[in-house]
Image 1 (cartoon, rainbow, N blue to C red):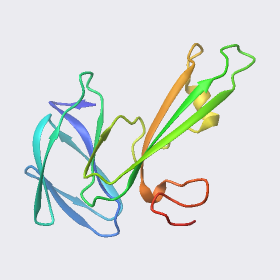
Image 2 (tube, rainbow, N blue to C red):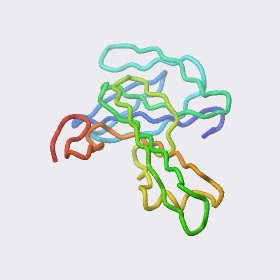
Image 3 (tube, one colour):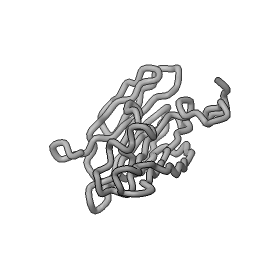
Length: 163
């Protein structure tokens, strides 16, 4: 999203401690387990965190798409991608098949294209069909999660913790 000569990006603190981060000349105080949105222009920037400087370049793709999550703690995040495919377009058979995949990362600057951010709840299989237009065969749902909030079917989260 463009905001008066800039784009909204997310900076996150998934830890249990208060953090102070500086991006360019902007000081950002992040209480524990809080994220904030800031506005950045495309180009070169510097993040300062715990007496270290981290230069980075922020650039949208040619269509103005793409997201950036700044991860000063180098915590684990999961980008979950699920493609829902209709088995048929006929009105009596609107069953969906889900093909999930996920990528785990602890990069300091996480880029990608997700439609659901940390605060957003992604639609599951029961809601995905309602989001599809009548002539759509596929719907791609992409959400970014903190590692502690992403649960596998065996009761472990992406950090390896059990429920």
